Image (cartoon, helix red, strand yellow):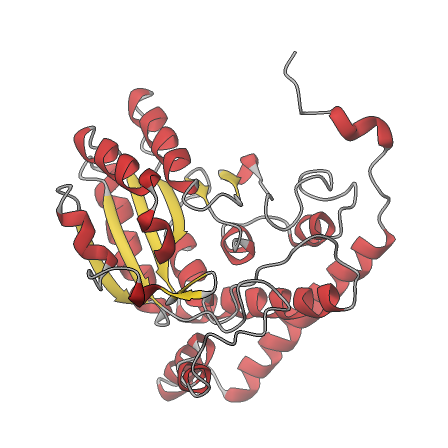
Length: 314
């Protein structure tokens, strides 16, 4: 299982590293927000879900969408704004969605993933299904009203929703520790009667285990749950952000806790993989991403007639 999780993390790392380069070189339009350093959360959470479970994510959602099973070529083409993209090239980096995989969409509105997941969880319960809905969000979003409204509604209706907070310390350009006297996001769930945990978000096995347990308990009617994953955002709020608000030695400290290094060390020490095998796996991930880049470059632009398609209902 850990080797599979490592492979998912390696693919996300390769994808976002290449996307950052392509954005810098002007090949990808719009804005790009990466989650480099946070791969363990995306891989661990999504590996604990079924294909038909729901996922609502944020503007920093590349990793979540890939880990949930979205097509790699379609994902890259979407960022290139090409017709072969998952949303026909009209969603881009911050609004990619794939309903066939339960991916309700990335969202550029801070905190908007939570009411979407609440609605999906309500639908699942009223239809008598056992589908679970996961809302990814950052710790800055817990100061939005949507967090409190969604958490309270899910609690009183016993909805199968997992609130997955990626606490990467920085809310856009501000240290989130200066924004509240409550240091742990998980503590806020107590006020709504929601069970919550704080987990090392760079330990992919721990992330997977706690999410799998929460998902199974949601299916049994014991939800909702709030899971706070402590991790770190390597890059700025957006690609190109020089990050003058971070202490100079902080990033180096967190890079020592690189989730790929942590998982790789565990695999080699247990004899489940060699360093050479892990290197081959990372190279294979890079090759898959490069193939997606070439396919996106060659893909056609959307037709002008498509501009209003999917905007208005019939």
